Length: 374
Image 1 (cartoon, rainbow, N blue to C red):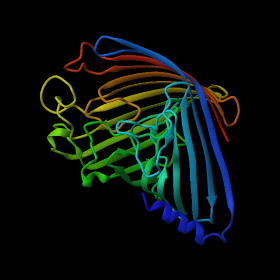
Image 2: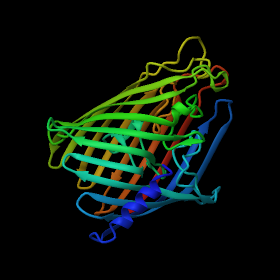
Image 3: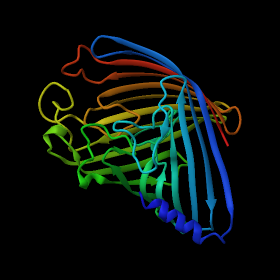
Image 4: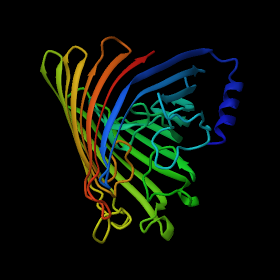
């Protein structure tokens, strides 16, 4: 990752005589968020806040093959903000899916090469593989949802095969002090072998008929799972498999019923004791979620319902907490091009009560937000 600036600067300098085609893009998202939480110790916590995220990007199409993109992103709340710049070469704080409120960074800074059926990126970029819907979610890869500012550091290649399959390969850099994507404890990256992780996905290109989405992927993180706890020092490779499928059916006019399911499983997990669960043996990892959506009930108006369960042994999801259930109802309205209003109500609970907890944690949250994109 530290060599990215040198690579990009060399490429741009050597192409100074090339076609100067620069495009600007950006978005601003603002709104209200509030939650009420029953804690595991029997207490109650509630809070609300105003939130803002701003992103501004520049893309330089050097020629038909090469391009460069950089984007500046910042987020803030109306209270409890940090203040600072997140270094381009640093990952996120451990256990985080975003920079903190009051911070800013470059969430995209990459060189891209496209030719024939190939598409390559190196640097910092966005990656997502989510089950489609009004409230799109994923067990494997999610960057920058909600008001978050997240990113992926590494090298990615996409190949569009003649068989109608997109093949995506990714080598991701993991800093020992914090990874670019959320990875849950007891995954830890101080071992040299864990400095790179690997991701491979197969996605069907044809999404115009009944099948709106068909996708499978695998994530491999060597020497990162401390299955007896980080202090014990014993580590294994962590491998996660996930897949998603969605269908679409036209009801009347432009209204479509889009429904889907995502499944996830990891063969090696931490012990139940390390996960804080009663009993012995390994923590379960089989996780799932379903999504049902009515798209364009009226022009630009859509509503979606999501429900899922994530076991304690599944450690890769930003959208689903380990050992948690989630139920979410979301409404979206696109009043005009580049504008979107969204409202959400979400319920999250512990899937299983922890061994040392007085009760399961339960949280209800909601938001109302508006996004303007250019």
